[in-house]
Image (tube, rainbow over all chains, first blue to last red):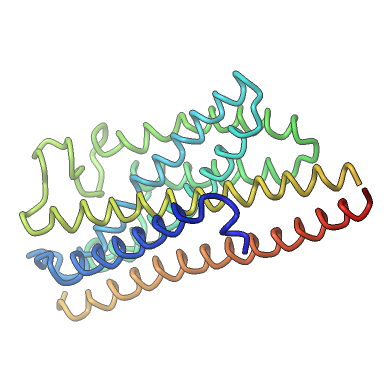
Length: 229
Length: 50
């Protein structure tokens, strides 16, 4: 089996750790955490919505760092890290962009508002979709990696804007959980649910990243063998 | 809004999150298995050639 080619023990351990932390996060967010007084149970979307947003932005930060490292050393490994992290960033940001409106509908009475946080997040999502398109539309490997790296660096400009948007502008979006004007804006029982959800999604990101990197390496190995045949 | 109404939205959101993650993980697994088979086949034909 393919998944047993590299460090099978670590991969299995990581898979089980991810699985159990996801179960713990589900329990804490759906059962343990208290129901929010004004929003009711729909507020429980928060735990995975925010965790997805953080991991999405972290994934794009990895794209940024890996793109710089690729341009600096032309090592193909960094190009693989950048590409796989961009794909995962898009997946996690998709969760943000879908669960946000589902949460907003019963609270704001609208699915969408063109406010700064939502708009900049949508722009970020489109930028990294475009990053994937650029990669798939170019044939020559080195040129593709170079252009993708440049695009990966430029696209990152939007990420801090997304992060700071609820601090810089007045928006419909709730205030930041950490580092906002009210300090740590969570009730006691919500804190473990939030941090365990964040931990579970961090492990999920690492698990999926390792898998995607392995796939890209296999793909590169196949291309190299085909060229030699 | 009644809390039972908001549970419907909670259900939709959680279903979407886990369906997407499940689909993506499954897609990765299938791709990995297909590439592993192709790689084994290519390595075998390379060995036969030598």
